[in-house]
Image: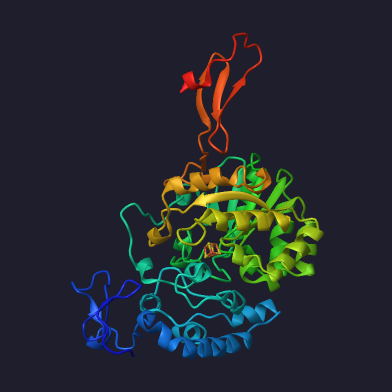
Length: 436
Ligand code: SF4
């Protein structure tokens, strides 16, 4: 433990003049508790102020941690799942946990903790604010809720004719086929799944199929969760086969984060299986360009070479991917891997996620920056899922300045004013300056 350092550390705790760490805890008495004061006796102290002196030791520690991590890597995805890091002890072996992370881990968060050794290996920096670390390692801010947050931010329960069956849009049916994930994302919208008590019953699947057969307007079925690729191939095959047996189901869609967090799950056998049930779209969920590793690329190649069309959804996350360069690298990288960027989501109002949310304007600005700097193929649609349901609302930068007598005054991606005249416009072009 370092000596006496007074003042505020880089994280959310403050140090007392005696060097103890004070961390504010929601619901704790004013002033919080101190590490040495009996509140959290095993809480370690942030090393930010001692960085230069400890640099050599830290690098040595990092190498040791990496060696321990390498020992748990596996190309066998089931083994990799068994070796996931879930506890303070397991995470401490590979990361120097901050007091805020320790607090969240010790108190317990609504979203479980599990990180595959593969994904942990991508956390290359020991910095607590390294984007991939923030995406998967809990932080005590998850324990705080803000007034605008709700447990079911998409209002899915209002459109659930059966448990885990969401029928928001008449022609699409969303099935939450599992509540398990390979890695649990700290910004997860469906965190309510992880705390529910009642199982959905062994007759769930026959009831889903009966509902589907009764609703001939449904032409697309989306498998989500949790992560549907957590299911074994045999279970997945049964689900897909049953869905394909319903004549009016035209398209299947499978949403997954697994290729980004457990790429060994994507085997030629899995791709063969998916190919049997075409047309089937696979939608990746990625959040940062550092997830586009050679192993992720290999997984995409297997899928694309088997003819599986792919898209991607990304949640806009503060200090993870809200910089234009980061977003461009992610979207351009996906297109190179034959994955079409599909949606960029404004972060939903799930409890304990306010530290991940950006202003809505950030997303609009990002999209404006992307047009003109990359091809439209790489630009996703920015959407908000408003609370209470009702479906996604697309948000676009506003390029229309005004319109008059068939003349449209527009700004291009550089902000330059242009005029477009519709057919049949006989009058001469108005002065663009006059249109403002
Ligand atoms: S993989 Fe999806 S469902 Fe699972 S924790 Fe992450 S965001 Fe939530």
